[in-house]
Amino acid sequence: MGDITKVFSEIGSIYVNDEAKIKNKAFEYKSITTYLFDIDSRDIEVNLNLSKDDLIICRFGVGANSGNLFPNNIFKPNDIKKDSKKFIKSILTAIKNLLSKFNNEEIKKDERLLILQNIDENYFSDKIDEISNLEENKSKDKSATCFSLAYQNRPISAYYKQVFLDHISSGGEVKENGYDILTNKFGIGADANLAFCSSNELPDKMKWIKSRLLPLNSDSAKLIKMGYEVMDKNLSYNFYGLKMALIPTTLSKDDDFLKDALEILKKVQIESSSEIKKEKNISEIANAEVYIHRGLELSAFSQKNLPILNTILFYEKSNSAVNLYLIIDDVLPSFITHVSRQMDKVRVKAFKNKDDDNKDNFIYLQRLFEDRLEIMSILLARVKLDNDVIFDKFAQLIYYGSTNKSYAYLVSWDKYFNGYYVERSIDAIKRYMELFNTIKTTKEEIILQKEIKLEEKMDKKQKIDYLFESTEFLKENNTLKSAYLLGMLSANLINWQLAINNNGSSSYAKWLNNCGQINKDSLDRIWKKSEETVRKLCSISGQTNPISTITYINDKLMPFLADSLADKSIVKSSYIALAFAMGGSDFNKYIKTKKEGEENA
Image (cartoon, rainbow, N blue to C red; front, side, top):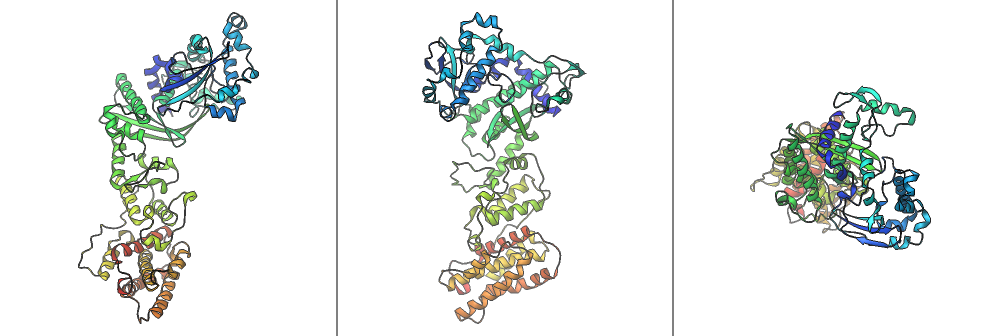
């Protein structure tokens, strides 16, 4: 955590002269519709171009219930309809906070403060309906709607700017012996209010420990706090309920270079969230496909060829609390671009958005990994996954279509073998695996199958042999070989049964769909059921022997299955499920012919 506080300090030192703008939340919005509620006349007027220097939106403290310094509240009219008391309470809290900056004598001499002092919850009782029906600013480009107590067409905050400047400049005096973590100068006791790396939630009896956990003097604390606020305001993006921020670390000691890098990222943030693309160097890819996150990919593009490393933070803000969930250190812009390009190559995206029409047949990592942060860690933190983890994810994808059980539905093997489930198919799994191998997600490269190049002169038996030998991950494992051949046999048998029944139904497919997960113990049951079904079909069709491909696959299967049943070693069911799915899919993709029935089944 010491490294990140140092980075915050470096950023803060660059923006220290812009403190008033950084700490005024009004500057975070491109457009603000402000409703000025005159405290004297009690009239409400709208202002669309109010100076943000006059409209000061600033927290009074770090506590969840501390409220604002001035009675300027970002709000949504519909929220007032749901809970008007909460809205009124927030206004009264802000009034109380402002008045606390003055003594009684000062209040008596100030007409505006005297009026504010007499405002209570009944003051708004006959106005609340009017306020709740005000029109909200719904512009897409960083817009907000603000309710502001005013006097003579100016927000109250416009009259007390010095109060704001004094408020943000005030800091705890150095009270304790110790050495500052950044400057190594004697004297500590200040607090940067970094909720995720100090101890804001400590009980009162333990507050004294706080300054020891992050020993800072008042100057260092101020710079760190400023750096955090710059990050949160200029370098962060929404990330599925959390916030994601990119913090650049330059390989140059030049402060001007760091400032330029920060300004680039600030422009990218505006560009990525804006409906109007302005920056030339960014807009050339602004409308391109997004594979990980638009802001992240635009940032990497904008940093191209710059000596920069990025630290990526994922955090959640809840009032004054900041919950830090993930830090990814030292990410090169070129690596982000590399990962995006590899995802483009295999048509894989990290997340599916509501507006994705998926015309280009993308598949999504969120089907394999339910946790979005896990996906980001896998893509960018160079996390190495065990093979067992990967195969377990693939098995869940095959069985349920997603690791998220809220969206899961069980596989029907007859549909699976025929390519009905595009996003959980073997082709999709191969694309995931190619991405993992390319960006080196796994501890060792995993080759599921060699590139398939069937020759036209091959007959079906030769094709079966070729596919079997090309499936690398079966290796020398008789159980996996048995599962693969049983998958082939099952697909072949279902096709034959459907042909005999005039494409009606397959009792074998129904049984297979209800037999549970495919594991080592179930392989023998599947084979016995296939034998039983073959005998019935021969009887129904009047054939003495089953079709040739079934006989060939069965003969090829028997020695491997016998050895597998005799072998007491454990083979993970996820590997077996994948082998079974591959066998059935390969048969229908490469061997099954369009003409159904008899020898063509």
